[in-house]
Length: 112
Image (cartoon, rainbow, N blue to C red):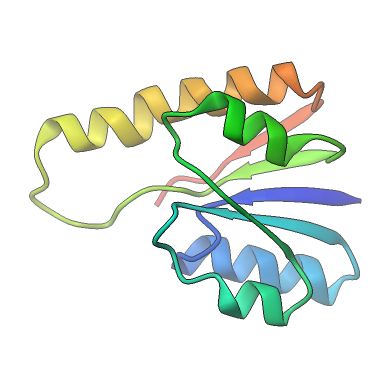
Protein backbone atom coordinates (compact mmCIF):
# COMPACT_ATOMS: atom_id res chain seq x y z
CA UNK A 1 0.00 0.00 0.00
CA UNK A 2 1.10 3.57 -0.63
CA UNK A 3 -0.22 6.39 1.55
CA UNK A 4 -0.18 10.18 1.51
CA UNK A 5 0.05 11.68 5.00
CA UNK A 6 -0.90 15.35 5.24
CA UNK A 7 0.44 17.01 8.37
CA UNK A 8 3.40 14.62 8.43
CA UNK A 9 5.52 16.97 10.55
CA UNK A 10 2.98 16.96 13.37
CA UNK A 11 2.57 14.60 16.31
CA UNK A 12 -0.18 12.43 14.80
CA UNK A 13 1.02 12.67 11.20
CA UNK A 14 4.58 11.82 12.22
CA UNK A 15 3.36 8.79 14.16
CA UNK A 16 1.39 7.66 11.10
CA UNK A 17 4.46 8.00 8.87
CA UNK A 18 6.55 5.95 11.33
CA UNK A 19 3.92 3.22 11.69
CA UNK A 20 3.30 2.96 7.95
CA UNK A 21 7.02 2.79 7.15
CA UNK A 22 7.61 0.19 9.91
CA UNK A 23 4.93 -1.94 8.27
CA UNK A 24 6.70 -1.59 4.92
CA UNK A 25 4.26 0.77 3.22
CA UNK A 26 5.24 3.52 0.81
CA UNK A 27 4.59 6.99 2.18
CA UNK A 28 4.40 10.48 0.74
CA UNK A 29 4.87 12.92 3.64
CA UNK A 30 3.11 16.22 2.87
CA UNK A 31 3.78 19.39 4.81
CA UNK A 32 3.69 23.14 4.43
CA UNK A 33 6.81 24.69 2.88
CA UNK A 34 8.30 25.56 6.28
CA UNK A 35 7.60 22.16 7.88
CA UNK A 36 10.51 20.07 9.17
CA UNK A 37 10.14 16.77 7.33
CA UNK A 38 13.70 15.48 7.84
CA UNK A 39 12.53 12.69 10.15
CA UNK A 40 10.10 11.52 7.47
CA UNK A 41 12.85 11.52 4.85
CA UNK A 42 15.11 9.57 7.21
CA UNK A 43 12.38 6.91 7.41
CA UNK A 44 12.34 6.61 3.62
CA UNK A 45 9.21 8.64 2.93
CA UNK A 46 8.95 10.80 -0.16
CA UNK A 47 8.50 14.45 0.79
CA UNK A 48 5.94 16.73 -0.86
CA UNK A 49 5.32 20.32 0.13
CA UNK A 50 2.35 22.57 -0.33
CA UNK A 51 -0.61 24.27 1.23
CA UNK A 52 -3.99 22.94 2.21
CA UNK A 53 -5.31 25.87 0.17
CA UNK A 54 -3.83 24.33 -3.00
CA UNK A 55 -5.81 21.25 -4.07
CA UNK A 56 -3.56 20.88 -7.13
CA UNK A 57 -0.46 20.46 -4.92
CA UNK A 58 -2.33 17.90 -2.83
CA UNK A 59 -3.58 16.07 -5.95
CA UNK A 60 -0.03 15.94 -7.35
CA UNK A 61 1.20 14.40 -4.09
CA UNK A 62 -1.74 11.95 -4.12
CA UNK A 63 -1.09 10.53 -7.58
CA UNK A 64 -0.55 6.80 -7.30
CA UNK A 65 -1.46 6.47 -3.63
CA UNK A 66 -4.07 4.10 -2.26
CA UNK A 67 -5.11 6.11 0.78
CA UNK A 68 -4.86 9.69 2.04
CA UNK A 69 -4.52 10.39 5.76
CA UNK A 70 -5.52 13.99 6.51
CA UNK A 71 -3.81 14.77 9.82
CA UNK A 72 -3.00 18.43 9.16
CA UNK A 73 -4.24 20.84 11.76
CA UNK A 74 -3.28 22.92 14.73
CA UNK A 75 -3.36 22.47 18.47
CA UNK A 76 -2.81 26.19 19.05
CA UNK A 77 -5.54 27.22 21.46
CA UNK A 78 -6.89 30.69 20.93
CA UNK A 79 -6.12 31.07 17.23
CA UNK A 80 -8.57 33.27 15.34
CA UNK A 81 -11.67 31.46 14.10
CA UNK A 82 -10.53 32.06 10.52
CA UNK A 83 -7.48 29.84 11.12
CA UNK A 84 -9.65 26.95 12.27
CA UNK A 85 -12.08 27.46 9.38
CA UNK A 86 -9.14 27.51 6.92
CA UNK A 87 -7.54 24.35 8.31
CA UNK A 88 -10.52 22.23 9.18
CA UNK A 89 -13.17 23.29 6.67
CA UNK A 90 -11.49 24.67 3.53
CA UNK A 91 -8.47 22.42 4.01
CA UNK A 92 -10.59 19.30 4.31
CA UNK A 93 -12.69 20.30 1.29
CA UNK A 94 -9.46 20.71 -0.69
CA UNK A 95 -8.12 17.34 0.48
CA UNK A 96 -11.33 15.62 -0.61
CA UNK A 97 -11.34 17.41 -3.98
CA UNK A 98 -7.68 16.51 -4.54
CA UNK A 99 -8.26 12.87 -3.62
CA UNK A 100 -11.16 12.74 -6.06
CA UNK A 101 -9.00 14.36 -8.77
CA UNK A 102 -6.21 11.82 -8.15
CA UNK A 103 -8.72 8.91 -8.10
CA UNK A 104 -7.84 7.92 -4.52
CA UNK A 105 -10.52 5.61 -3.16
CA UNK A 106 -10.02 6.14 0.58
CA UNK A 107 -9.50 9.24 2.71
CA UNK A 108 -9.04 9.01 6.47
CA UNK A 109 -9.62 12.22 8.43
CA UNK A 110 -7.69 12.30 11.68
CA UNK A 111 -8.92 14.91 14.14
CA UNK A 112 -6.75 16.16 16.98
